[in-house]
Length: 157
Image (cartoon, rainbow, N blue to C red):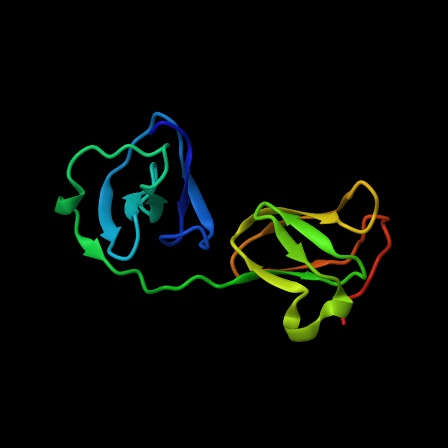
């Protein structure tokens, strides 16, 4: 490995991280997903398995992946969401997501599906666009923006 890689529950960024493959460590690829560029690996110092991307500059493959069995992963991820419950429009990073305010709720425009990870909501209405809230999301979680950039609290309906 040329850098640290998250080992995920399934073959994609939308799955929870369940381990880390640290720089300069290696593990055995035991299967490859036929629908993506992900391989199933043994988690070091464990009897468990997980998935790593082979599309990153941090992964290095030794050997021929054609000799690794194909596998179709069918345990789909559980979506995670961020919902804006304030009267201010928000900008979410990473992902550069514009999230309208609660009152723009036509067709759920104040809600967005995201991958597991860390997110920050910036208030686009307050000068300087201060941080309103930060979130750490896993699969299946819903995060609610209930503070605007002025620190004013709101409830989700």
